[in-house]
Image (cartoon, rainbow, N blue to C red; front, side, top):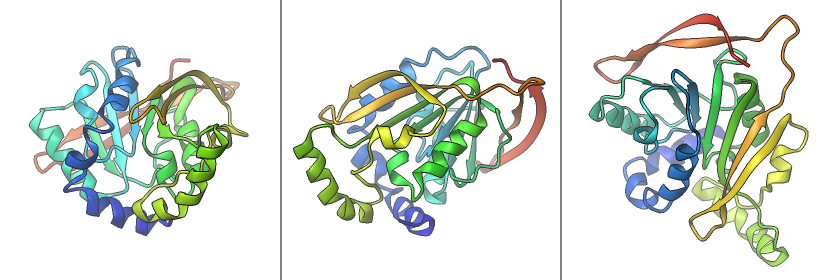
Length: 238
């Protein structure tokens, strides 16, 4: 998979994504957000926000920033944000493997059905670690390769086929986490068929010697749904 192909595939899904995948993956999204227990003014990044299906699930006392590579998906997310009057949400078209945010910007990073749908999962995971503050949380909701040898073998066989649909089935959680500073604090099997997992990790990267400086985003959706961005520096809580 390459970025242009991923963008084309998911833009083509934009019009039907909610009907085809919305209910199937609803429980996983709901479980991920329900258990976050977000604090007031907590800054959350949703990587691969898609059509914004999860946006109404977040409490309004926190700040949500959503990014996606697909302009078609983002157009749907902007419509949803306007319909629900979500002025606590900001949306950007951005490559998750090369984010434009400063280090330690976010308290929590959520990536639902993303890690196995990108050309370079390692760069995406490293970017999530970079933009999340030390001690912050990184939540991945994804299908990872099954521990059962028979099922794992089947997943490896069909992975070249599913790549044409925009995702892979042969990536294990161990491979994703190997060599990173992420420490798993919770793992939960979710639907469909309990073959998907909600994995919550603590970002155990070291804190800078002179203090860790994050950046809070100030901006809002304007009338046509496009985002106006301004960034101001602040000290991130650890």
